[in-house]
Length: 291
Image 1 (spheres, rainbow, N blue to C red):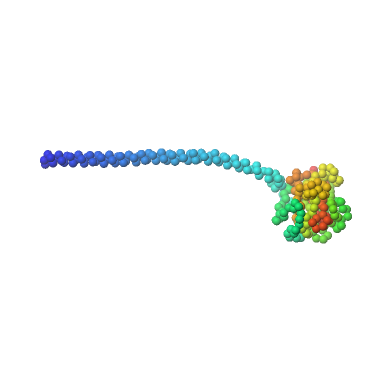
Image 2 (cartoon, one colour):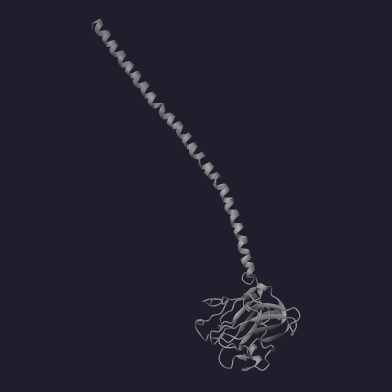
C-alpha cells in the first residue's frame, strides 16, 4: 500500500470516527430533553396536586356556609309548630269525635254570603289534645234565651244524638238566640264542636261562642269564635268566617287560644240562609277538669 492510499484510509477512518462522535452527541442531545420532560412531569403533577388544594380549600368554607343555612331554616318552621301546639306535642292524642251520617253532598248553590270559607274538600284532619281529654258537656244541664223551643227540648243539645233526622234537633225562635251549657265545674277547654241543622247545606249567621266563670256571663268572659261581621248581634264585630253546615260540625280550636278555663259555654246564632230560625243538634266541649 502506498502512503497516499494509507493517508486516504486514515482520513476515511477519522471521518468515520467524527461521524460517530457527531451521532453520539446528537443522541445525547436528543436524550437530554427526555429527562427534562420527566423532570417537568413532576412539576406538572405537582401543579396538578397543588390545584386541588385551592379547590379543596374552596369547598371548606362553602360547607360551613351550608351548615349555617340549615339552622337558619329550622327556626322558620318553629313558629308553624307553635301555631298548632296540638300537632307536635308529646302526650297529645287524637280526639275521638263520632260523626253522624252525612245528609247531603255538595255545597249550597247561589248562596251569597260574605266572608264564607271554602269547603275543605276532604275529611277534617284529626284534632290532637292532651291525653285524657273527653267531652265534658255530655249530659250536662243547658238553658237558653228561648226556654220553650218550637221543636224539641234544650236537653237534646247534650244528649249525644247528632243526626239531622226529625226528632234529633232543637228549633229556637227567630232573631238572636243563645244556649248556655253548665259544665258544673271549671274545665280547661281544648276544643268545642257545634252541630246546627246539617240536613241541608245551610249557613248560620252571627255564630258567637263565649266562655265565662258565671252563668250571667259577667266574670272572665272570653269570646273564642265570632263571625258576626256587622255586629248585628251586639257582641262586637267578628273576624271569623261563615261556614256551611256539614255532618262534621264546626270545630273551634281553643288550644291555639291558650286552652282557656271556664265553667259556662254560651253559643249565639241569628237565623240562617234558609229561614230566620235557629237550630241546634249537638254541642260537645272537649277538655279536662281543673284540679
